[in-house]
Length: 494
Image 1 (cartoon, one colour):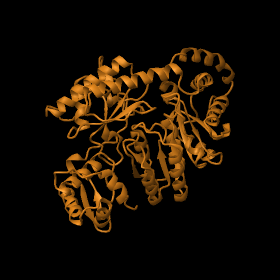
Image 2: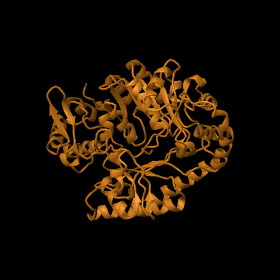
Image 3: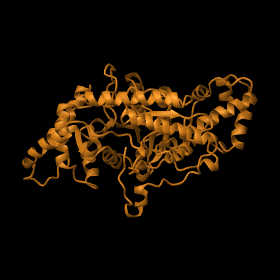
Image 4: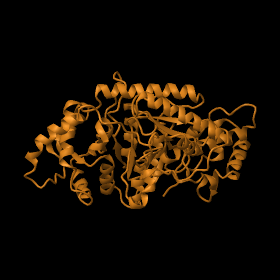
């Protein structure tokens, strides 16, 4: 497998202006160290040669040489024969940061923000009642609808068509949620040892699913506000990957939205590389700004794309119902991969989702208003309580992607927050190759009053870490972890 690289131009953009009043080599070394620790340059990436970076930064060769030497001495760079200077992490920083997200089952009074999901919307009970009334017409069969309830496939197809991607029901496979759908696609598409491009940061359960299937991951570094499209296209062309798993719609965890121009450029690079896009559209419907003109689905730019959708964010996670939208020629392979693990999603929940999507294919107005209020309240509280915390305000999605102040470690903050009655997921959990130590995902999925309390608890945790009184990170102890020995296969949560 070829060593991933980062261009001199992107490296220069990440470094920015070197801080005045300090030796230039030291400022450069610190900037590169932070880029590696935060995941903007993935661990295992070959940095530009000293000559290339000298030209891109317009500094002396000595400055770059000494900066690289500092990084080697501090454990952030290793020289390998034939590979140049490759980023790494100091031994003490090598934490397992890609664990799946599980339901925490917290004690009373604890605010759990490890899961970016919301309560059921109004109307779910009525939808169940209507679905139960329709259930008898399906009871005469075996109940194994491997492709899904035909009417639900039609509604899903109609929604894609309305979003600008003409779709036939024969291109839709109903699944038992997005994680199950992604697993089906990966089993059909990716073999053991195949390379797969994955955004960094990304959804942890995706990383685990790829690794469980034996894929070799190629990180695609993202900036806090989204994709560096020229660099992403260059990385895709050089990766030689079988597939690329992308979240272009209100990306988890950054909240970034890739526009049509960026989608077209990235799709072009994927086609030239022979890499199949696997697009996670779980959050595509969670747009919080009614006036926002949304881009076309990624598959409108690349007909080979396989899209994975879910009702968990737009409607309710308890339905455990999702879908895969794929070219008709690919669907038989998906069905073959599906039947190795399950024969179909529950019929009743499919009928419930059918009822809900007929009324609202995406968020209801009430749900959008509630989420927007929680987002704005959370942002205001964090700005007031932790003024040196940095984050962008996403126009959709369910989370703020927060950069902690210099010297504040997100894992330590997560541990300290638990003592304050708050459960949050630290940045390393979203990393493909280590780093992201100063980042934290903060979902705004609860009511505004609770989100204000959560921000207060986070502020206290940050103060504890800054004061040097932070506890040593240890495994989280909740009701569910106490029962872990009897529940070894706990379900995954978004």
